[in-house]
Length: 253
Image (tube, rainbow, N blue to C red):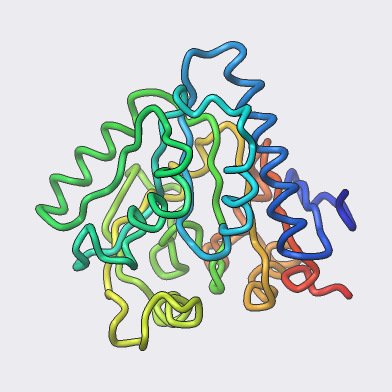
């Protein structure tokens, strides 16, 4: 049960007592949607975020043995440029370790930024465009970013599906705060990311945002104008998006 539910624009907001409660609630609702869609479709296409903020959600989702993962085609939303694919900080590696290796989706499409990046943009963009995306499970960054669409590079009308971006300092510092890198200088400066329109094209969005470091960005989603100054504000326009918060990210007691 949510501690609180409210609506901001089209965005449904659910607030839970703890990260664990938030993760279980999101997993329950995502699982139900997967099974609902699979009643009428042979396969579904899902995009996942790779971040510590998703850990409780992944843990709860893995516990549901009734999901037919063999009929799920899985994607992810961003990847650093300059890391080896096997580096522990790689988002593909994170998702394999925390989710894919255990649930074993029927297909997993990982971004590979270790070779010719422009070729990879073409390859991955074509995969994304083959069929509509059914479900996207995402988070919000400390600067309001969605995937790696930081405020300086976010474009609500981006013509691309995937692009190269330079990461801003707040975003790079968040990777240190999250324990992914030892220091700021170790964080890559560039990445590839799905664009805002690509993320907004998902039929159902489930946005999982625990923790006190996200509180400022969340307040901006509630109170600020819809603007690339806080890219997550665009979620207020999506017709089927649920934002899951705990009391720390919401700011209540």
